[in-house]
Length: 83
Image 1 (tube, rainbow, N blue to C red):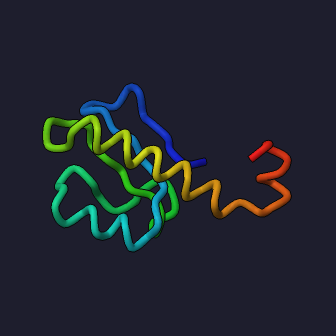
Image 2 (image 1 turned 90 degrees about the vertical axis):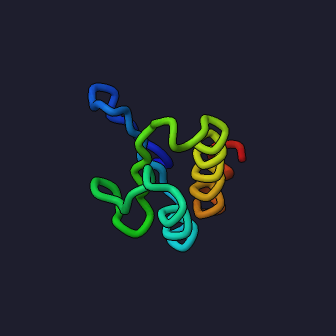
């Protein structure tokens, strides 16, 4: 899993899985990015969707999350998914 949402939660939030160091680096300039709570605490990064972060930034983080998870799959798993 590379991301999850809580559709009924307000304000809206998405938790994305990132390399731990990059997640920590995002927290300093972005108050909307918090340390993980539901996912793995090292990899999960809840992002509150607000005007503080642009849509482009959030979409880039989602893409990065997907790519990071795929990169860390076993070769057999990537092959079985056709990647």
